[in-house]
Image 1 (cartoon, rainbow, N blue to C red):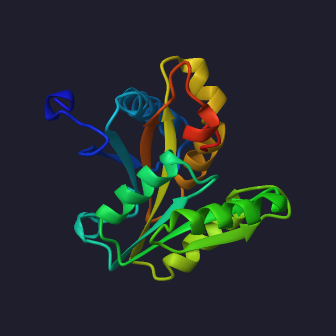
Image 2 (tube, rainbow, N blue to C red; image 1 turned 60 degrees about the vertical axis):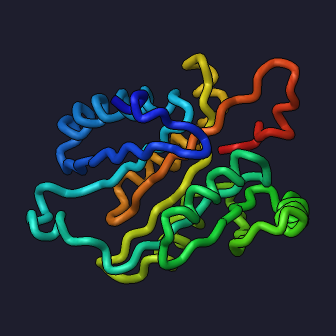
Image 3 (tube, rainbow, N blue to C red; image 1 turned 45 degrees about the vertical axis):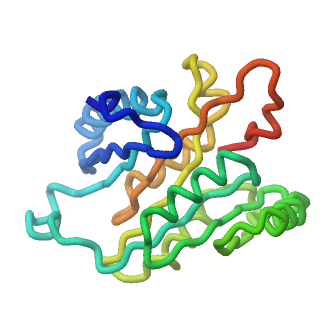
Length: 216
């Protein structure tokens, strides 16, 4: 069905996947296996964006699940300035959030001036916030940014993650390890939506660093 919609980079199709959060670990594992399989299948399809929306069926009433968020903000994660990042930003802008910013979490502070210079060179029309991570971990600074963007209980924050589309499963592990960690962590954060924006891995004869080998 999704292929019949003819998804492409310029006209992507978003697949929204509800993700129940179960306090019972075994049931969570069983549910997650099915959902992960669905999301992995879509991630390999060019032009398909996957949004994971968590909910707690044991705590939320039906009225709560159907209520729209009071405010919707988006964070675009940036590891480098390249085509994958630009594509993710354009998609985030198309959703018309109340607030949108890019966040670069620096586990290597020496990289910060280069990213800032490239951001200004490309004249990207959204603000970039550079955050130092003294312990070389992306998660605590990212959670702090999410809390800042959605301070109220009915706010929703989407985290946009540029992610490679690869042809082999072992390439997925090689290029998207950090993205997998981020998504696994955010799954249990209330009112946090994770949006995977795929980018095809460059083919033979092209420069992967130019096109985005440093994507999460």
